[in-house]
Every structure is written in structure tokens, then in C-alpha cells.
Image (tube, rainbow, N blue to C red; front, side):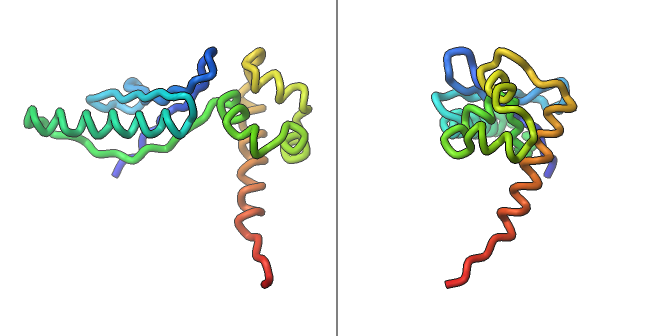
Length: 137
């Protein structure tokens, strides 16, 4: 099954949106979703996917089922995970100044592609480290 990127972005009003890029993925249908939280937006997105699948079946058209890979923009990620990851902690993980991370989170500045890769790589390294944690009873 083909994997399709679904982009998660935070709006100026604080809500979240999820969408696919038809030009990039070359699907015959588009899907979007929205909500107050990322979880709400993803649930709405999957609801749209189910609706589109049902529509194609009703019309007798072939429907390409796909898997989704959710991609955050940096501002959306920082805002969504701000209750779990502090800017101070992210600074220690990524080496990016808290103030700069705050600018990214607020949307006042957008990180350059190299900075996005640096933040992403640091988070992936952290997730691998955390994934290896074992506790003794």
C-alpha cells in the first residue's frame, strides 16, 4: 500500500488542519480535516477519507487505498507538544536557542530547511534513546 504525506498545520486561530497535496501524491481525490487539536483534526481527516471511499464505491469507481504519514510544520509540532516538551528541554536536545524555538512556535519566524532537519534529527535521536529505556522492578 502506498504511503501518502498528510500535512498538519496550526492556523492563526489556534486550530489545526490536515491535508494531502494532490500535486505531490497524484491521488484522484483530496482529503482534509480540521479541529481544535491535532487529534481532532486527524480524526476529522480520517472521517473524510472514509467518506471519500464510500463515495467512490457508490459511484462504482476504483478507489486507491493508501496509508498516511503525518508531517508537522515546526510551529504546529512545537505548539502541540508544548505540554510535554518545554522549550528549555528542546534547546538541550536540539542545540537551538529557546528564544529561536519560541519564534518558530509562535509563527513569527519560519526555520530554514537545514534547521528543520537539525530539529528533526535531534528528536529522532531522542526517540531512539527513549525507546531503549528499560526499568527494573
